[in-house]
Length: 138
Image (tube, rainbow, N blue to C red):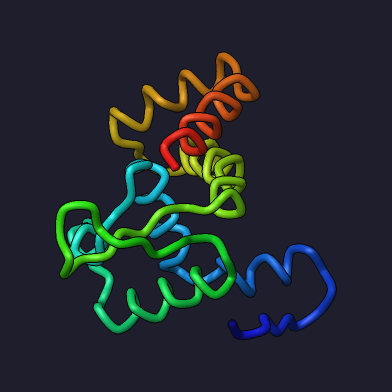
């Protein structure tokens, strides 16, 4: 496994070295919405339209940084299933905060608005419940 090189000791900088590009958090988002896991093809269906070479690179980096694990697909020997590790699941509060920030400045889909209303009622409870559901799915 490759050692991750960081530009500095700053926690923000170190974190961005792992998930700060424009695709990685979208992959993590997709895995959070699909706790049973995603195949390579599932990621390609995302509306953002990630290129295959970028997807392969980001999945490899996520695996090397232990945010995702690659497993045998239970229904197909030709596919693999990507799932979040606990380290990846621990990004859920970051994803929630990004959604709350975006709600202030951008149009939000109806399903996301409903989720954010639930978050606003009890953020800690929502995060705790969601993290537990992701852990239980592993």
